[in-house]
Length: 247
Image (cartoon, rainbow, N blue to C red; front, side, top):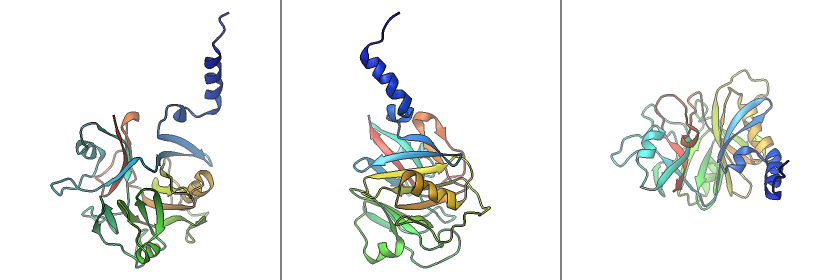
């Protein structure tokens, strides 16, 4: 019988305890929480995470194919998803900053729908990531290279949004973003089955350990991961967020 080299035996043992997605350095993988699968796409501070809305001609991009078409030579889209609520025109419902330029102002008033279910918040990309409650953001705006406002907040300083009910019957495919306490990691998440707000928020807090997390949307939520062949079907989107790599 042929004996495997030591390195091969060690690698085989490691594969038993380390998820395949980690071994493959795949930023998107499935995590099961309370019998519900969620796809988590992870990004680290310093990586090229961007927001997109329109092309150079002022046309709404709306899908990953158009985002990919606008990338520079040698750039590759790793993943993308919808990134905040928008009007019928597909313009952002609240604050939107792209490449340091504010395209849409922040909205701090209470209003109808999930966006106006205060507290809502802003996802900010600078040298680190942050999810900040909207009124706190407006009172002391940080310098964001990219930012998008959405709502409601899912997790606020470790607490779930006070309006979320554990026995709610309202379930949708939902997506959002959570940020680690040190701001070095952002988790972009979509539920792969319909879930309540309460379960979605608890996934960020209890499974990922995110002290702050922001809801992007539900029912229209879509994820694109070109390397996995994933391109969720649906109508054109408004703001989008994603990770770009260079080959």
